[in-house]
Image 1 (cartoon, helix red, strand yellow):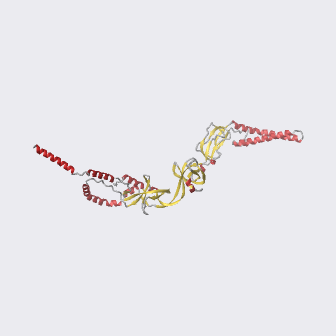
Image 2: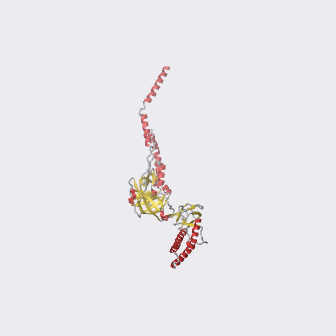
Image 3: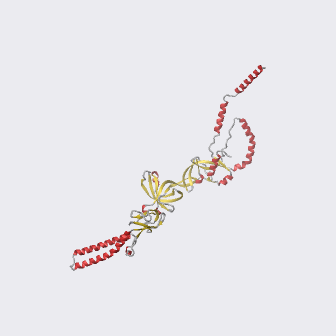
Amino acid sequence: MRIFIQIFITFMILGIYACGSNRSPDDGHAHGKEAEKGEEGHGEEPVTVASLSPEQIKAVGITFGTIEKKELMATIKANGLLSVPNNNKANATTLYGGVVKTLNVQLGDIVRKGQVIATITNPQFVQLQEEYVSLGSKITLAEQEMVRQQELNEGNAGARKNLQAATADFNSLHARKASLQQQIKLMGINPNQVSLSTMRTSLAVTSPINGTVSNVLAKIGSYVDVSTPVIEIVDNSLLHLDLQVFEKDLPLIKVGQVINFQLTNNPDKTYAAKVFTIGSSFENDSKTIAIHSTVIGSKVGLIDGMNITGMIGINNVTTPAAPDEAIVEADGKYYIFIETDKKPEEHEDEHDDHGHAHDEGEAKHAHKNEIEAGAHGEEQTKNLHFEKIEIQKGVSAMGYTAITPVKEIPAGTKIVVKGAFFINAKMSNTGGHEH
């Protein structure tokens, strides 16, 4: 009995060994290659075609157009600064030192030439008026003495030197009166109205130009003199635009050329300026030349010292162009969408090691797919397909941008002029899988 058991165990061992030896040594390696191949085949390529139903197109508001020939103006962009010429800036000062008594303006106020902006007081003002009034009596006395000496000299009763001294005193007093008269005028007082009862103790500081108060440098109670301005005034009606242009662009700019510019902090509004002179030297170490222009048209919102970006038109260029809204950006590149007959890429299922089983599964579903295709075929034919085409952008003007497609597009091809952003978003969201 023990012998039969040993023989049975021996045959079992031999059978197991025979089954293991029937498998080829390369099967494991082949299976690894197939798995690796399957993984490589599963890599997704960029999606370039998208499909939208009529309902989606209507909901998004997609509209079509064609690539048009447009005459667009090529431009040079340059940075610059708004400035006011020095002859349109002024400091309101007083020729006589004094203490500020009143201050009638504040920052941002609009003032007119001759408008009183402050008053100052100083005892010296009264002394000058007092001397001017008393000088009238001295001149009258000197004149009488001069006449008396003339009479004595004619009768040989007086010395000639006395007449000369009286004449000199009379002329000196007249000169002093003329000097005081001019000083009183500079004080803003009419000399003919100066009397003992009308002496003024304060002087008015007036604005020398029309403009806007840009800085208030004094305050009530502070001492000011000719070297201490009370306020600063800027006349923005003659704003200048100073652009910094590189040497290579200088030959393209001419005197009288119109420049469109925008504020750096407010690019929504466009202003205009006209070139009146071109600099003849480089600005510091920037290797740029200053282009001086006068701002024309509306100056609302423009202030001395604002930073701007200027667009200098060079010439008109006729080029293929598309509306700005038709161009989308993705990964640093620019694209448009055209209507195409191409179908969206279908995602291929992975193949398993059981090829026959997979074929059998396809056979089982073939009849079902044919029924679904027949049911939805009419709906699928109504879908529109859009292909993503890379382009190079050119100049932009009047809502259009010059474009150069990377690959040739047949003439008359319909492009999406509105709603391209939504198509691009759908294409990005599907990630290559059409649902």
